[in-house]
Image (cartoon, rainbow, N blue to C red):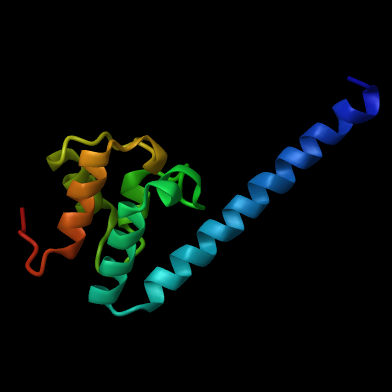
Length: 116
């Protein structure tokens, strides 16, 4: 590896991180501007897609963080849900098992949310 390549690596990493951050912010805004039911359905549809979970803009986001995107949900409620489903607070979307992703999607699609 040349000295120039070593100097470019941090800049490339920053550019990639910024690209991911901007994509995640755009998706967050997209979900937040939808009515609550449509936002939940949109997010549930994304969670059902294994390709999106693995490589989408929210792949490295935590599940708790993603659940706070719709306007109806706050961090406390999202954390309670993740614990109720047996998902750690710091679990990333890309690390969800198929079963866990289906559970979160099913909860998002439920017409009536249970209050704890």
